[in-house]
Length: 389
Image (cartoon, rainbow, N blue to C red; front, side):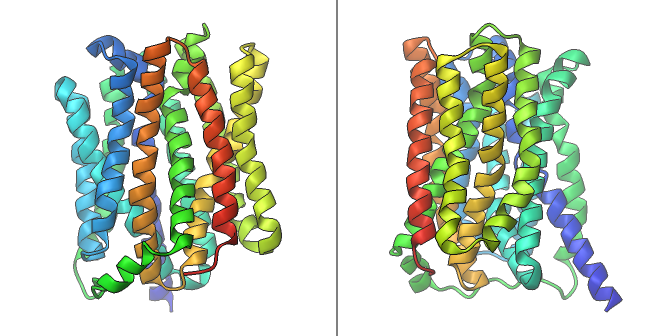
């Protein structure tokens, strides 16, 4: 019994360390994106590609992950994350894009596998472990958003070294996952089931969940990419923009932990109103940013962003787990939601960057943000009211 508990704690520690690699390396770019633009003379459209590339990797590699043995694929994914981070920082302008893409492939692998690992290893505590997983994702995003500018500017280490710090976390996760490669305790490769995999794509429930995942990811990564630049364009300094980014990430931490657990306990008929309230905060925040630019109103908008940015991704994961009955169903639904969903999300950063380049103003992009927030509420309603797969 004691050995079993020790094994579960070891697996949980590995899950935590892997989850720390899944958001921070991406959110770390936004606060220093202006430094990259200045060094390489990037347009906003080109700079948006830096955030879009990991999302494209999520989209194209997520469906392939479940076909292979979990333990080996997770290890290879972590190797890709570490290698991509080094290439992104230290191999020049093309390396920024190549390294980001390689890193995105690694994150895609872990994104798909971790929910299945959690459901397989913690079936009786799945909700709590998923809540912890969602919390660690937000903590990772918060650290990424918070340390880039201080390390790059205050410590005079530059953006490359600031981004390369995440290699340390990737190596730690590799060391913790390596023991899973040997011994008898291996996750078995799922039995191929092409009919079931195809059936997922015919399910209306799967499509509503996928659209919800896609739009919430589009908003999240677009805000991560461009929120500092929006504030800088309003006349604020890089440190103020970085602090506001850190504020919404930090305030989203408790929401990320409690929102999935609360929603899981709420009756289905009342669940949508809670979810819709979170999504509506996005819309209110974008309206404020469109019409107001005073420090106080920027502060209010930042706080409003914190709640959905912390809770909505956990809700998307909860939809996947609640609407799928078996661990292998979770893997197929997770693969679909993350592949197509992140393909939708990939449109956001580069589209909003292009709109800014074309109009030389962030206001049209804020209108698009608002429309995306309204559509997110609709997709939440459909996903919540749909039947289980």
